[in-house]
Length: 360
Image (cartoon, rainbow, N blue to C red):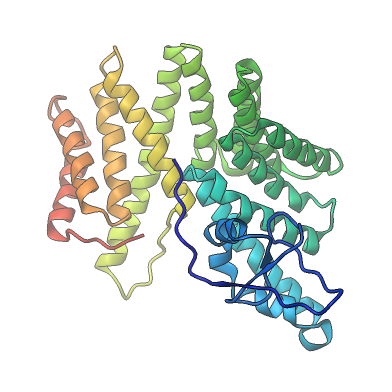
């Protein structure tokens, strides 16, 4: 169940000159309240103010002031577009993170503002609007509002049809959203086809072994779980686990090298907050599946638990690092000459030497 924090900004009744109207940020109905933080955002009631604050307004309250108060002669069109582009990045990131965390209701205001700003910057039919439509579709799918989800997906499909050169990145996102919706509708065969297309386009854009393609494999496996096709699920989960283990091993190595050589300015890759949430959900689901599977696969338990231990070390949580690290170590000790035992012990030693490796 999603919970909402109380808003920090205050609202006051609008005192407008006769004949002047303001409109609610969320529903575009007549507004009666004003945010006292920015004085440029308005709401029809306190519920919409709170929903917007929790969803996105807390992040962008002050950023809206120069956009909504400055005239073109004072700021210039190019600077306003630059600020709106900054808002697009923030809103997109917030909507993606909240959807990954399962906070679909909170994701809606961010996705809506993302669409509004993208339309202002790129025009009403630009391919740049597709990611916003897809986020709105995914948020509504998560809320069970499948009619709204289908409407937003239809808008995305229409833009893509008019943009034949939109590229693999957009197409993989479109098929992923379609696959999620068709899974929710129970159209599993259609969902599988969309996820297969998602994987194809993601592989073309990022590589077959990329962590972006990995999520498509996981979603495809989830459909096979519903269909009871466990051999296929095991195969897909094994591929996902190998990919993430390899990626997290590289991230851990980079992190350790940077800690040991703070003045060397070594390159260090990282995961976005959305990716952190997604990989945690993915690997946790795989670990639970493997531990409950009728076909015991200790090597897979080791691989996935070690991956989760590395993930939580990089996120700065020593308790979960030790929890999953010890699970991996115990399973590895039951497999003679397993080459992962040493790296697992090394990671546990890192935690014991520095129980607070620092947040991501």
